[in-house]
Image 1 (cartoon, rainbow, N blue to C red):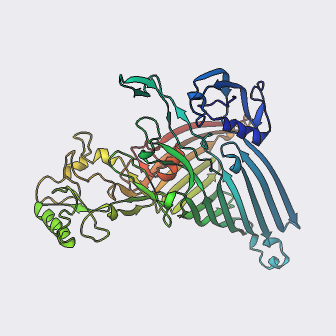
Image 2 (cartoon, rainbow, N blue to C red):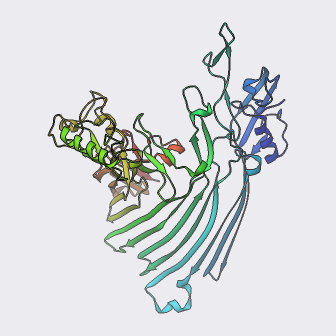
Length: 557
């Protein structure tokens, strides 16, 4: 039996290649191509004598003979596409595209996807009735609609993978003498139903130019829907899947969402003969909302436990932004035993004595969570939405100016309407350990009567470090992204087309109320797509953007 051997991939994967790209002998010589840029070299594995026909994985065959195996790409794609464009009298424009994409990462029934786009434009300023408006130099109305797909996941997720461990770390004992036998474990659950993640988008907008295009204004409204997001979810421990000490996972299509909003851009050119300058302003407003869940029972997706014991920091559910921060709302610190007794008494009154503690294990100096559901005490139902990692506003500005041989550029960038999780506070202000704390803990609660927002010290300090609004801060900022000043030496024009020296500062200034190093946070594991989607905006002592000073010389010949 022949196998496409790559980390124990099943024979099914080779069949997927054949059905998608035609029959290729698996013993083919160097250079056979499955798809554009996808090549393999002499992939030949002979295996037989399986203990079970249910799991025919090369790695667990009783006998096997690997002749050679080398593969420089583990997945392939085959695409067909076409495009048509038509312009009538330079006024009416039509563009349309159609493509058919096949991928090897999905099962046989879901390998192909059809994607398309259509765009229309009307150059209103070229119509005869616009001649009475000479100040309008350009006016164009635009609209488009299209669908694209995403198959950006690792290959072989439609089949199980088997891990036999390293050395003797997977063994089982059998019989009275408890002798050890080598074993293997299935570390992931297959999902043969995986399919293309799809994105559809509607755009409507216009371009407006005034005063011979000295002033240009661009407006776009967009509504983008993402369907069947490809994500990796954790499986219950009761499945028994996963490497030793780890929890099993499965890739699924889940969490459809939409983004809607608008984009504005304004550009002005001075057209001055002495001091020339132009100014560009842009802003984007976006609202994110989850519209569907593909999980079993439409259960919310919980992620983002950035430190053990804190609990999940994000919750993805229908009607809310994706990966919204979800936790307790911090109210104040218990200042005395008398106040704690009063809180416990109110919990007992509200529950007719069934509950005698407002918060289990709470002591004077501990944090008090708000009773969101109003039942008189704190439990899991008091967690609520406490922040949004998706900025509602993004904006920027670029100023270019020149006077004779001097040139100047200023670039600004900022976001607003966004929250950030300062996860570093767990270690630097949490006081769970008696070291590496900031000076903020000097104001902590120490004795009855102390009024402060900083709880008592101690490794066993109740639920003080559970995820709550204490970690969440406003992530708004305005950053001076770049400043540069240059001078072109006119005396060198006889030797060079251009001889320019300049100085520049990158990330010169940042205006923000965020207490961490840098409010510009993606995720604490930005190379992990899963973390980026469901654990964005978690700052676990991320390195700040550096301030860079540059002195340069530009030569054109």
